[in-house]
Length: 292
Image (cartoon, rainbow, N blue to C red; front, top):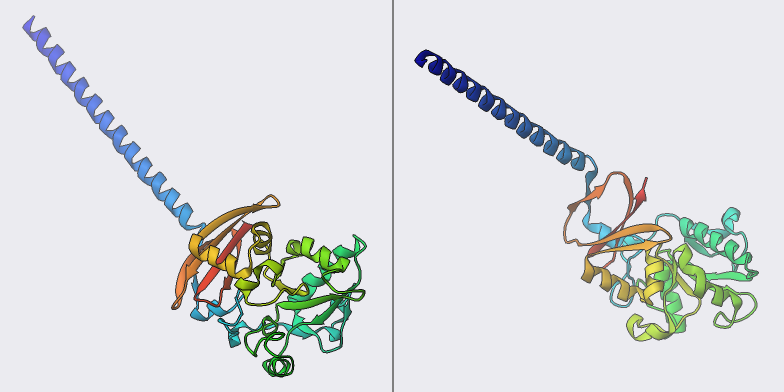
């Protein structure tokens, strides 16, 4: 009897030890699997972003730079693809030029042509470009001849870096013309904004100019139109918010503001498109859009 009881105790202890070892093994295995899963997640996250370097002079480059009486054009601000439109017949389709000297950023010229061709489908087809890019010397001469009420001093005009156009109608003044009304309603769809609106003169410091359009690109033109911002107000909004997300035509854009005082690095998604622009005031705006 005692011998049988002893054997039962031994068997019980052996079973208990086996269960404990199995449990510990399972826990250890689960722990290892958790660690491996966590490492995999971190590795996958790491592989979805990359670090890019932003030079200090990026502050002065891009579609969103602010140029006005307080913030002059820097050498870095001037677009590198300035062309004389009369020498590029492929860019002058659906509109006229005031003269053969009109120059503009080539990329902006292509978007403008796309825009006026869209206007033609609405039977609006009397566009003319009266002015585009001007050199500092040309701007200074215009300022001397016309005065400060009409022309900015050299270096303080949007015409000094290639993203602005004075657009007219061959039929009548822009504030009355179908061309002016069409642009006011639709230019944002192509990345353009009316730079000096009637109700923003105190903010822009410039009189109402229904002919002066500035390219800022999407989604910024859409947000500016949606909220009735001037460019000054929009850039101040981004600086204050630091990060905004906006859905436009079924696509969500993320817009980030970063103050820049020296060369710095930021992380951007590998599998998404992004654009970087300075604001000419000490910051850069990174715009992230759809997957590549």
